[in-house]
Length: 398
Image 1 (tube, rainbow, N blue to C red):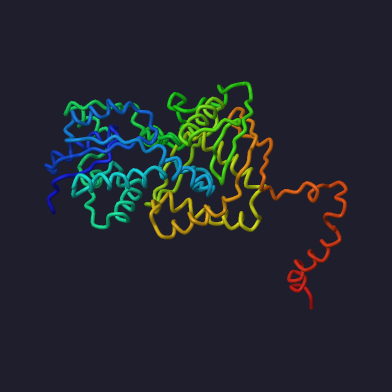
Image 2: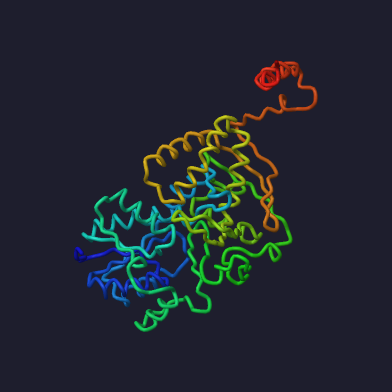
């Protein structure tokens, strides 16, 4: 086995990567540089820095990637109406290629000969990290400790960290995994592995339960430019601040909770519980605006490819040639998706009240059931219907 001199570890400071930092030094005898991407996880990053250095890292990079995460990844998914298996809004999947890309850039800068990640051998994240590594740096050495070490589960990791004097938040009694970023919070494993068991209410971070949400509905107006949200109630926001504000508003109204059993890329069914309040609101608003500005056939074509788009994101093919083609197509469809959507938020619901755009294809004078003053000749429909019915009639004509 080729010796490793220096490795860059994607480090969250959680249970898995805390154990990995110790394990890499112990088993590979190499220098370990930690990299933490701030994608909005809301952690105390300075204490994370101290923790990594105390645990034996030679250096740690903590970098704010929130702006790029929102603009290049989250907004792209919203514009594509990307929802995996009709439910999952892809919060974790969208963050991984960004983190892996920057991790490689640091590895090049530091002259590291390997990168390492904390994903398990059963999950999707190992694929997402490594497909990005190999797409951008084909000859990189990848270390995936979960596929190498002898620890059987997280209880073993808790004990390992305890023996080495490293403090971790996870416990044997409450060992579910949490992944948080600016888009969502995800929970899996531990007590959630029983798919019949209800998630405990004290688990949730971003959202109130609909039962405990505000009894007063709230109306908001979201403005878009070329498919990207730019303002709330007429006040402009940067991408990061806008999503953070929508997360807070949506959370107060119990919006964005999802509990699903999803099909992982490796073939395992897995339960995930998610909180995605802001992007849930944006998906509803964005779709409502598209309904008046997007050509029917363009919309149907885009929608037919949204499933493939979502799968590529979920599986980790962000930097694949097929994804690049789909992304360009999505961007082209968004050129007229500019305007405002009025919504009511109440007890877990996002209700569309109105939409308007200078590019609207909706013409009231044609759509009306009242006198259209000759704008549409209803008699034309007879010929249209007969032509559509021709092949159906021929099937039963002797």
